[in-house]
Every structure is written in C-alpha cells, then in structure tokens.
Length: 94
Image (cartoon, rainbow, N blue to C red; front, side):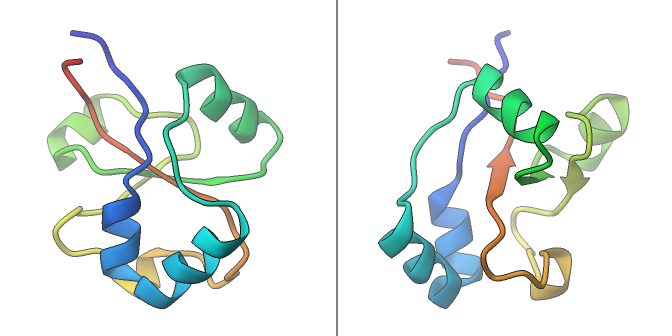
C-alpha cells in the first residue's frame, strides 16, 4: 500500500471555516507530495496533523506530526497562529 500525503481542505474548511476561507484567498489549497511535506517539515514552515486512526499513528507517523481525530478537530488542537501553514494527512491506497 502506498502512502500519500493529502491536504484535506474539506476538513480544514469544515473545522475552521473562517480561517480556511482566509487562507484560500492567500495561497489556496491543494495536494502535496511526500517530498514537499518533508521539505516543509525540514524548514519548520508547517504544522503537520495525522488523521489516521490513533493505533496507526502510534505505530508510525511523520516527524513532528500531531494526531487529531478527523471527526472531532477542535480549535485547541490547532496552532493559535492564524497564518500557520497546516497539513492534514492520512493513509491512502491510491
């Protein structure tokens, strides 16, 4: 099974609609490759959130990733910096 990194704009927009709308105006949303995410992590230029089931997260996750329940993301789970770049990912069979 290949693992892809996906940006879940729907989740971000649902959880934080005002923030997502504001971000969309500036940079937009889209998909990132694994290499692009690792580059952002290396530069400390992004906050990474793992949306896999908790047991999968405990087995392995990207460096610096924080686990969040994709069905119950709270504002307190996210950084207070409204300009922060956020990446949400989960396993994908594509």
